[in-house]
Amino acid sequence: MSSLKEKIITVVGSGLIGRSWAMVFLSGGYKVKIYDNVPGQASGAITEISKQFEELQQAKMLRGNLTAAEQFSLLSSHDDLQQALEGAFFVQECVFENLEAKQTVFGEVEKLVTENVILSSSSSCLMPSNVFSRVQNRTRCIISHPVNPPYYVRLVELVPHPETLPAVMDVAYSLMTDVGQAPVRLRKEIDGFALNRVQYAIIAESWRLVQEGVISVKDIDLVMSEGLGMRYAFLGPIETMHLNAPEGMEDYLQRYSEGMKRVLSTFGPVPDFSGEAAARIIKEICELIPAEQEHLTARRERRDQLLMELAKLKK
Image (cartoon, rainbow, N blue to C red):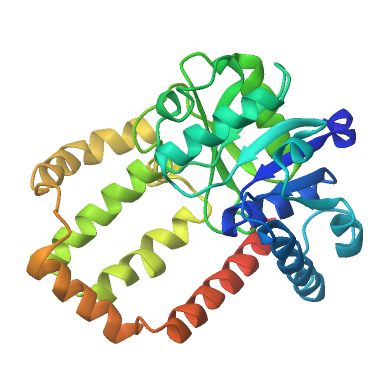
């Protein structure tokens, strides 16, 4: 992948995810052009990135082998899309999660780049076949879905369009690995991808347990943060099963499959996340963490700090 370092990555959209992607790519020594169609937004993003780089360097959490100043020198901002795309081999779209907006972006980008430029979307839930429906050459299209915040949580889901070439998946996988992310390949598109399907299953059962009066909001969060989450920060659910029986997975299934099926058969319908139950859950969580910005900001900062420490530990 070292040959790619001479090339350019264009980030389209300068919001939180766009800034995060820019920082990740810069940490790998890539030149990054960040574009926004709102005049002044991209240059404002650069100011914010500079500030974050300095804070990360002071905290000894800056990623990559380059200093903050060296990484920042590889970054430029653009209000003109054609300028921003000039020389790019990889385009990472980071506009808001709206199908029409993403389709419009890729329709414009395709007109300005050559056939071999990879078009990548940050979409968290829109299907590649829909996101890239207006692109003529869909063989070079892929979704690279990060987890928020991408600088500390390294997973990237690579989701192909039905027409995506294997070589495009390979380049995206190599790029993500090279910049220190942890890419996973989905073999085909599916609604919600992998991460959100697993996340929504956890959310749904947690919601049902609170809604049915089995447990409080505070305690269901502790079930994850002080229980399952402790393991899942280092092991996945399949490895957990494999390690949780003396003779491994086959032994686990012999011991526990009937119990799992029994419990799973008691799961209720998909919650509608509204009405009296929603009002009660909102009330409980807001008693723990008030919804005013100062409280939410403080908790987000705490989250990011803890994720930084965890990322350091996982190294």
